[in-house]
Amino acid sequence: DAKTTQPPSMDCAEGRAANLPCNHSTISGNEYVYWYRQIHSQGPQYIIHGLKNNETNEMASLIITEDRKSSTLILPHATLRDTAVYYCIVRVGGGATNKLIFGTGTLLAVQP
Amino acid sequence: GAGVSQTPSNKVTEKGKYVELRCDPISGHTALYWYRQSLGQGPEFLIYFQGTGAADDSGLPNDRFFAVRPEGSVSTLKIQRTERGDSAVYLCASSRQGNSPLHFGNGTRLTVT
Figure 1 (spheres, chains in turn yellow, brown):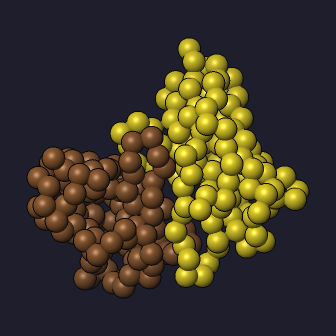
Figure 2: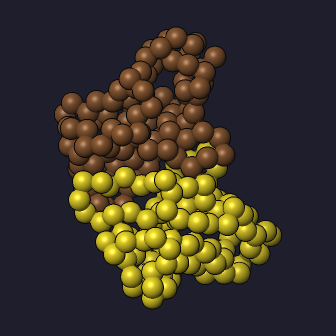
Figure 3: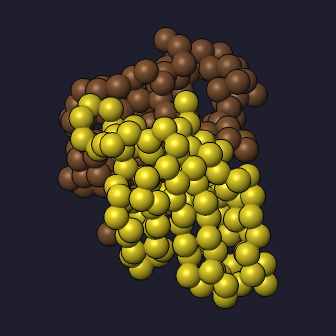
């Protein structure tokens, strides 16, 4: 059972920031928020993950609300190659249950 | 460096036949996962290996599906008496350890005719 809620689709203009929301209102204290994306005909690609602090890497930024019930993935300058399905996933840190449970994600379409 | 490699990239088989799908994980990754993905859906978890043993096989749909990882590296997903409903993309992923980010291959597209 997916524990996250995402909009099914979003559009973004090329060069603009893409802000992808995710709700995870039932997240537990030891669950991390992970983001993956899947470009057509490829396997999912890891983007970023975090527990409670905001995170940034070369691909994106992850903003997690203080109550941890929602988060936003930010692609600062979207390009056409960022068109993909973006998955927000909560995952227990450590322990024996390490699988990722995917929902249906958000299809981000970057428009020229 | 080399990523997760899956072979074949495409497999067409007849209903009732046996198939094997291979996954070569990233070198040194101890955890290995199998998923399958139907059109328009997110990947569905099948099985997770930590080393040679299956730590979680709760996603295998029935006893026609079986996976092995005898030396803790390469894994094979085996499907007996294939059915048309088994048609999907089968994805493999590996991670350095159980709670590290997963790195996925590009999958094997299985078509059962």
